[in-house]
Amino acid sequence: MAFSIGELARRADVKIPTIRYYEQIGLMPETLRTEGQQRRYGQPAVARLAFIRHARELGFEVDAIRTLLSLQDKPDHSCAQADHIAKERLREVDQRIASLKALRKELKKMVEECAQGRIGDCRVIETLADRSHSHKDWKEAVG
Image (cartoon, rainbow, N blue to C red; front, side, top):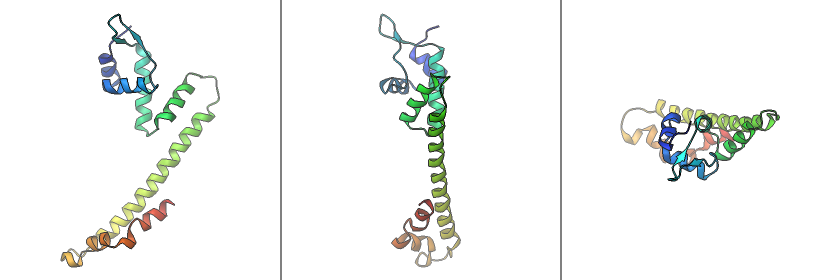
């Protein structure tokens, strides 16, 4: 069954320019075209777009997705490379979480120390104006 790019976009819940972009960068293979040069797709294109969309939602970079797609086409091969890519992404997420936790701690401290009086005594304003605190504590938590 062949359907249009608009129908593919609807079925895969992505925008048409996204499909064209993925074709340009090689995440989506070139597809059949009608005599009028309209793209035609089948169900495998929907599945591939779902894979790409899910990988993007998880924060995988385009190159990692390209590699994962190529691995998907080799079901009998070792999954070591896929595991490596996922572990690297997990490490990045863990670093981001650590950074956000340290940032949260610094903001919470700033808010808790606020006297809620005059701006001249405001801990929020004072902390933001003090360059010696700039990213210091939470940057160290990230490493």
